[in-house]
Image (cartoon, rainbow, N blue to C red; front, top):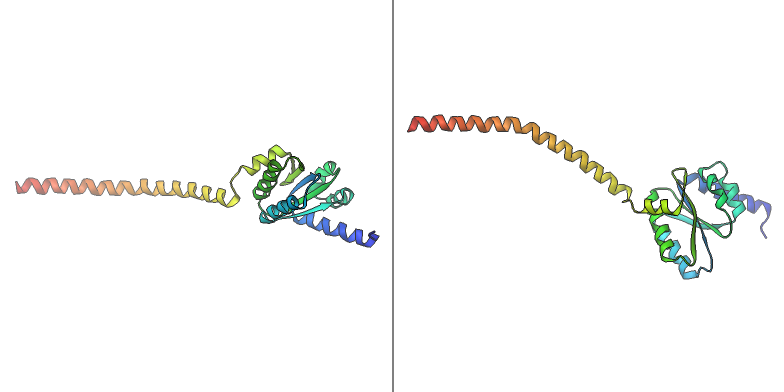
Length: 178
């Protein structure tokens, strides 16, 4: 049995993890095999998330004063938390894919993304988005595309003027030779 000091250290460590995270997914499971647990942990590790099974009272206390306190009502039964520090899309993809593949052992309780509590359907909607880097590249392409069009239009006026002057010169030069 843990001493009060060990429990306090666990509480402080979890509270620090909650403070550092920007996204959290709270999940439950029943009759999960070791291989399924390893599969989930590997997927979450690839997504850059930390995953741990937590005691509900410990999670409630650690969540106090963080955006994750809003989801404290979902800390019932067996609870595990996946904490992400970066892109919410990759974590959402990992959790929603595992939930679809393993509905018999895995249940989604709640998620907190950018300080807002989200349901499974919202997580699936987030998961359908492209990654942050891809969205940024698409925006940059659109900005660059407009700039390219502007340059093309602006350079068309002098180019067209030069073509007209050349054609006039050819007509005058060709008419004199005849």
